[in-house]
Image (cartoon, rainbow, N blue to C red; front, side, top):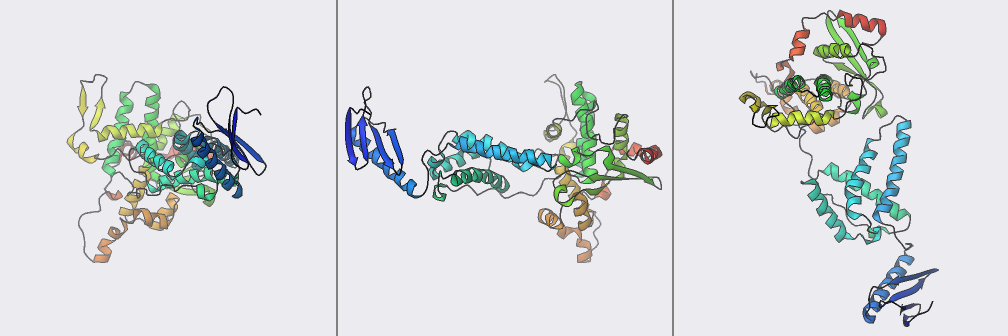
Length: 449
């Protein structure tokens, strides 16, 4: 290599210039590795300082076993994503849940990769990590919960583990992750009055809308939320994987007895399928679902649109309904000047609903049953959870459950939202005068409803 100028700084380290460039380059050898790079400096003294810093830094890394040319954050993150995608594919083959790993990929792409991009992993110091923490808080718009931070830190650790195992960094390069998350708040639940207002509005919106897909979605949503509060099952995987073969039906002295086998969900991988009792007044919804799918097969999914397709956006549609109630709107016409506001008693029933979701229906079911002094062990089994989990998340209810028994004082007023006080839907009221023997006969013949 021909040098225009060459200056030796120490043995094995020198800087030089080349024709057609005013900037100084540096070259040195560490072990068997030859390293040449541009200092970016035209001043000779500044070039010497940069070259010397790089030389000693690389010597130290070599002694620690770190290879040169650490990868960018994005390159390492893509390797982690490939590992996760492989695990997800294997989980699907084994009919196992892979939701957590799918969430990890989403977190990594939306936050870490978006921020760090092509920054080399060994150049992300504590100051840069703190900048990321501040940027992420802006993206969230509020303090993250402890559980969310745990998920973020878990996937970030996988990226650093990848860099660590490949010799690109040492454990001393890993900055501290943010851990000061917001403590989990008490789980949001609906009062029975709020729930009934939600189902009534769904029914009205279904009659009001002219969009076929929206109408089918609302039709299904009405039955979906009734099923959630009739069983305590988890919205999402548990409910949406119920098939006709999973539902058992019989009449005991004319009273419907409905059970459903939960075959897929959060806990079935570890505990196996579980039998769940369905509240008897769901029979009206069940009859409508049966009528909606006259050509159903045993392995068909129950909760699908009337055209047979899988529903998309159930959770979003539910949130839209809740938001309408939260804003005090029962009807919104195309003409922006014409708005009908719900009655005063409705507004009182639906305050602060906006942060509650479909999953809040499960929490509501558990809360209502606890207030009804339901057996905690039986409730845990019904809901596919543990007594410890119920105690941890609903402990604020437990001291009041048996206040009369423990205090010796008789309270005239029943516990609010006790299931003894609930008003059933119009559909359920109409069901009380029907004969459902045909459903029982149908189940006896076909072995599914």
